[in-house]
Length: 385
Ligand code: PLP
Image 1 (cartoon, rainbow, N blue to C red):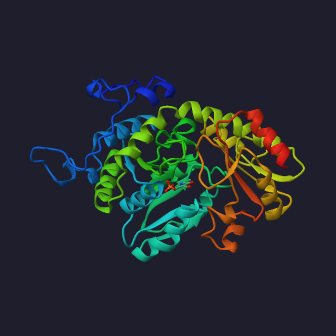
Image 2: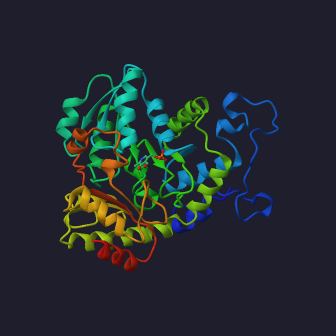
Image 3: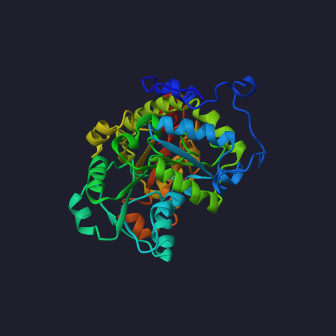
């Protein structure tokens, strides 16, 4: 296995970290091990049997080493989707009778799982504002076990007091979980701030080509090992071919995200000055209320932004119909620019009241910027608006 010194840059580590050394049969590209089972001597226990559902094929193991290196964490586990990572992590940390604190305004799928499914299992929660430590102190209970947050919220791109969360959790013995999908390991490494578990939808930036769904749980070795045992039973294993595609995608992660950071900032700056746009949400803009905090936490602001069209849903639909480069589709983090109306897509599972409470109006447009030319993207929006 290649030992990567931490002083090597991320650009080098996405290529070399965690790779087999010597290479398997000299193969430069990681081969796909399309086998559900392997010859083995009698194993020490069930969870080490080389069997595909037990998340231990060579395609899994190379990803585990690479992802833990990129997040500067102890351990990693890939999963069948981002939601498989999030639900497995929550079920690893929490059990019936436990309570946890949760950031308001989460990714729609996570919000629905926490509000609808976890209470059926006897797990309770309270939503909190990530800027109000007073509220955390008011809502904490004797049975509070965890604190669940996102690095940046989707689609409004707010950035909470993440250092404060870690400090508060340490003081009260809570396990911290963070969804770091939006910044990707290029822009932020929450484990270095002290987060216990870092989750990714690898469907997004890590894979980067909108051709698989995948997830990861990364962080403290003891917790990732518990999550592996949970996942072995739940069965949310990533298929070897998807492992191969994710591994290939990660090799260009730093190049892609650098371009996406640049394109998103250019588009946000352009949109902010346009008369058909009433508000732009992008933490890289000086006007964003969380800009200073984002600047202190992240090395780049990511490829996602959102804005309100002055013409509401009707104006937003008309603009989307006129765009030539941006395709109307859910998801983010791929090389193609995608656009959606969150109230009609990612947050359609929420009621109108819930959406409004989160500041997600009918005319809010979310833009997941790709790696096309900055000038061509700005021109496309200039024409469509
Ligand atoms: N977390 C965030 C921030 C997301 O945007 C998404 C999907 O859009 C998920 C998690 C869920 O990921 P997946 O679709 O891979 O299950």
